[in-house]
Image 1 (cartoon, rainbow, N blue to C red):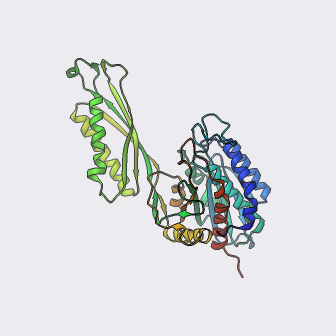
Image 2: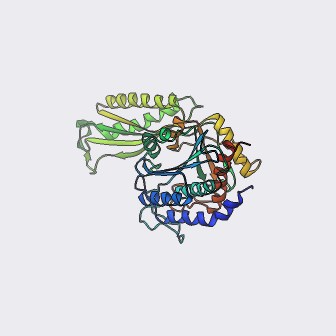
Image 3: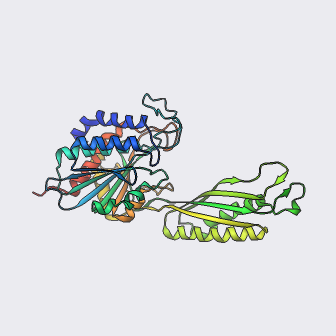
Length: 390
């Protein structure tokens, strides 16, 4: 595996940054310490520009190539935020913050992009401009959109943008990617069913929202089984059913909550349309009323064809032939890098994290053996996309 020698030499230092972030996790937009550490390191590397406060607590660094930065501008993104999970790894660098941990590897993503930034600032063996993007609030806060709304793509006129995520279960040194949808749109719904409460011994005098709700849960499953083309991916999951607090009382109201996952705008629209009709008609059938709130979250993460081929080629340079899966199955999890891919062409790639616990698991830990691999991928991507003129 052609790891860049200088990055291999820096691996211990980058690992130390990673473990420091791991010990001090911050969630959503609370990445004040993390952002400060990132900005401090970028300043010490001698970048041409370091800006904080983009998207509340995001950090942007600019590295100009040997030609002074004229030409193409490429954005490289890492997420910084942790999750509200109690860590059980028992590692010496385990989280010091109760109820919070880096259970998705964003500490590793941040450290790898910092390592690449240090190398690229030292060598500047490219023509053009690199914008390193350190983003808060990937885990449900749409930090990518917040940075875009603060002018990320226009203040630094980015032409292409690339992202990377670790992948438990895939060997370290291997990559996976695909053209088009690679991760799902993540929408949330809330249904409030109102009936007529009363004594459980006299159900005929009530309009039972629990019976209405159970029938509604079953009916919602027909969106996937009877409305969607079997070749189109869609998930409708009711994950919360709240109603009642006494064994002998039929409640007045029940609340259902859940998520819808789709891989195309058409399926997303279909799901919302069918949910509205099902909720209304089922409630009517039982004499109840119901109100649906459908909240659109992250859009589909869709890779662009040309940039996907390019990213896969770079990964093969690093990993070797046969170590890059160019047609990984799409996943129904979400990723707010999708907002960046809606703004600019680019690609999102997975890098093997080895035999580790799964993402969002309290025993998960980022594999530090991935650090020189990920750093080398970023560096080779930049130097190949924007080669120095002869």
